[in-house]
Length: 109
Image (cartoon, rainbow, N blue to C red; front, side, top):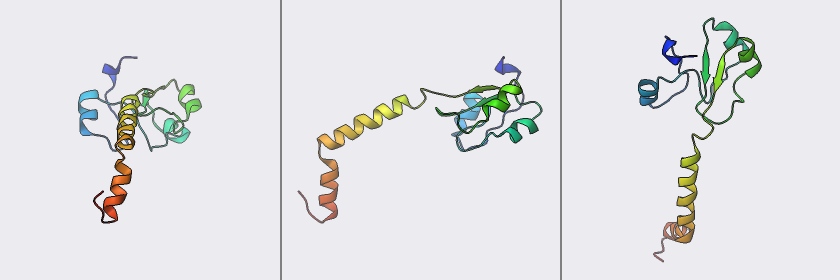
């Protein structure tokens, strides 16, 4: 399926405006439940794009019956998770949580 043939796009959750402009994001994402009722009501539904790893909010059986392509971004958060882990390791190594607690107690250790 060529995405260039898509004429209408539904973005049902809040996203950075650049997603809609630069990526021409197809489908629904995140908190939205793409139920069988939603899939059956949309006569020209072609793609459900999920900005995340799981597809638990999409009725895959109903999408398959109608020939709708369902996609996600399984590695989308890998870099962010790695950066967070590195940052937290540095916080622990520098004892930042303990220093924060000390400052909140009015000390300057």
